[in-house]
Every structure is written in structure tokens, then in C-alpha cells.
Image (tube, rainbow, N blue to C red; front, side, top):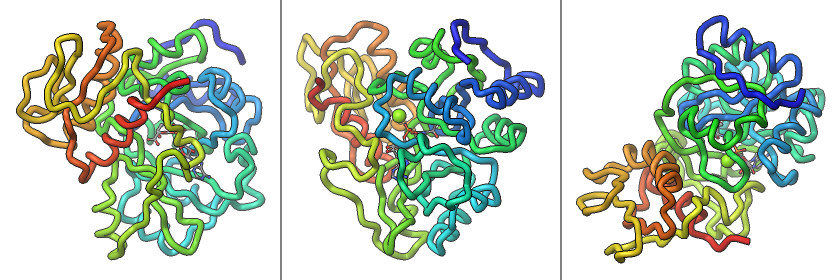
Length: 317
Ligand code: TXA
Ligand code: MG
């Protein structure tokens, strides 16, 4: 199915029924999750998954996260390790993606895993996503619903601005509560490894497991294959750790600073995560050419925020 007009669906029984039917026919539907909007397709359908890459203009070496309604369904596609069971019990449904050994008979498209022997899976904690995945009853591959390299969408309006005319439908579910993507933990090896900081803090994961987790330190050598250095980029340039804002700059503040936009005037990293992408979208919409961002503390969700800001500020090709 190739889209040229994108329908906006209301998240009632009729709208969700229609969305599930579009997935069943190999189409693309964007839907809200608690982290960001996802661009979903049937993960078993090669043509449908290829259409995701085409709509986003995404490099095809980048594997996708599969979304399912519950843990029982995860176990039909993956082997759950002990650590995975522990993390799933504590954080699913929620903003956590687990990388697990893929079962050979899983039937997941090789385009989803980019040929890897592992699968990234998540049970999202958003009532609309939950109902939609239950209605569809199958695995849904869904990257964030933005053109490749651009800012992730936290509202249906962001999705429309980036992908209208390129996808079949959007389920409008308002604003995403968490605002940054899920944390990715690789549970396929001997030791769990945090591949991407995200909506569940490393501190919370470590408290659950009673152990310190390893994190890949160099963003230039990503171990989540999709962690490209330049990403989440607004149109304007981005300067980080700004203690002051120059006259030609538009300030994106954090804490008690005077700036036209402020991620969290009270210095709350959770609030800042929820505001991050929406404010970057607003800076784009107003045509800001030089964006300067206050320092954000590197703990809790601050780690995910700093990861995204570093990529937004990275040199672009
Ligand atoms: O919150 C989220 O995770 C959102 C919502 C829609 O669920 N999704 C999302 O997907 O951020 P995406 O495609 O933008 O990011 C997927 C990340 C990439 O960095 C990719 O490299 C990594 O997951 N990934 C996928 N499969 C993997 C695997 N088998 N091993 C390691 N990393 C994997
Ligand atoms: Mg993304």
C-alpha cells in the first residue's frame, strides 16, 4: 500500500479497528506510545517493513523495535533470559526495550532485525497502544514516527508535519507522557548492557537487578546499530552546556535561567524529558538558526536528555 493521503484516526473502537485493519493489509499507521509516536507496520510482512524504511528515508542497516501487547507474546518470538524476566516483571508495560535471542521459527521479517540473531522488543504502557496491539494481535515493528535523523514526535501534529502523505494513517492520542524513547537493554549476552539511555533510568534498572550495568561509553561507536551520532537534529545549530545565551542565539533553558524556552524551570529532569522534543519542534517552527542549551544534570532521565542533545549538536553530513 502506498499512501498519498494520510487519515487521522480517533482512538475509539472504530478508529483502532481501522488501524489494525490497515496493518493487516500491509499499511503504515503511526500511533502514540508513552515515549514517542511510533510508525508501525506488521513485523512479519517484508513489504510493509520496507515501506517503513522508505517513508522515513531510513538507512536500512538500522534494525527496528517490535511492539507487542504482553509478555506472553514476547515469548512466542524470543527466548527470555532470567535477567529479562526480572526486568520485564519490574518495568513492563513501560519505556524499556529488551534485546533478546530471536527464535528461529518466530516469523519476524529479516528487515526488522537487519539480519541480527536478536530482536529488540517492548510492551508499551499507553492505553491506546495497548488496545491497538491487542486488537491487531500480532507483532508491530515501529521506529519513532519522524523522517530519519530528525526530531522524534511527541504529538500527532509532529507526525503530520514530518510524514503526512507518506503513511496511511495516524491514531491521534494527544501528547506522549515520557517524551524520550525507551531505554534499550541488551539481555542476549552474559551480562546485561544498556545500549541506549531512555525513559527508564539506569539507576532504576540497577536497583531492580542489584548490580551495576555497563554502558557503551563512546557515542561514535554505537552498539545499538541505530545510534547514529547526528540524530534528533533541528534545522538550526545546537550549542550545549551554555552558561549564557548570545544575542543571536535562542535559549533553551534548564532550571532558574531566563530563556524563551525552558525544559524545566524547577530543574526537574522528568519534566525536561517530557518537554525536550516538543520544544525542539517549536524552535524549528519559529526558524531558530542558533540554539543554545543550558547544562542538564547527567542523572536519571537527564542521561537520556544529554544523549539526545549530544546527537542534536553533532556535526551533520
Ligand atoms: O520509545 C521507543 O523505543 C520508540 C517507540 C516508538 O517505541 N521507538 C524507537 O525506535 O525509538 P527506533 O527505531 O527509533 O530505535 C530503535 C533502536 C535503534 O537504535 C536500533 O539500532 C536499536 O533500537 N535496535 C533495534 N534492534 C536491535 C538489536 N537487535 N540489537 C541492538 N539494537 C537494536
Ligand atoms: Mg528514532
